[in-house]
Amino acid sequence: MLIAQISDFHISASGVAYGQADTNAALKRAVAHLNALVPAPDAVIITGDVADAGNPDAYAMAARILSDLDAPFWMVPGNHDQRDNLREAFPDHDYLSGQCAEARACFVEDRFPLRLLGLDTLLPGAHSGGVDKRTLVWLESALSDGKPTVVFMHHPPFPVGIGNMDAEPFRLADELEGVIRRFPNVLRVCCGHMHRPVLRGFGGTLACIAPSVSMQLVLDLTQQAPSQFVMEPGGLALHLYEPLGGRPPELVTHFGLIPGGGHEFAGPYPFKDVVSPV
Ligand SMILES: [Fe+2]
Image (tube, rainbow, N blue to C red; front, side, top):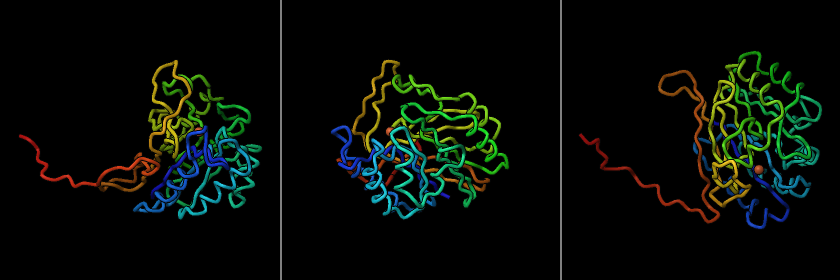
């Protein structure tokens, strides 16, 4: 199966975020890109920051654009989202009404060979994220049958070496890592929030962060790194769960860029006349 992960749309009714980023156009490009993928994704997971300011107009716009998406999709909220307005804009997404703890919009989707699990890390009024003890109990219960699972969440529960993001601790990060460590059936922890592709270890598994479909965080690996974005191309993560090379199914993650918005990529060109020098 193929899971596409897209993140951090920051949709506004006006279509422009921070005076620079045409986020509505970026999401439309992402939807067109996903619809053209071969093979087509079996599921699309949105890892938060659907809207920039959590207002109903923005969610109405996002719902309109996402209605063109061919694949079924699920989402978790980010710190720019407002749960009640998100629920109202996506009434078909029952799980947004809260599964894991009061008000938290978590989900478990079991229709595929790989379980998709969404963890709501939104702390209203805060830029940082976290979980609570009831959510951890729910997570343990959801993982206890051993089925291979990917956990999707907005906030990465770990530092990444970019100062302005690392300054915000994730609530109950150590406790969450302890739960993940106890369940080797968690094949990946997939986050957003960082607006950059990132990989690292977490709780004995591999964690990844998908880029934004619109603007990216400046790649500044200093503790003084300010919060700034650049209009690098939008991107996505593709998580492939297939038996490859005669081996049992393994989860392989690819990162891709979304063309358009001033970013056009020349090619493809064939590799030819390639030899192995002796
Ligand atoms: Fe974001």
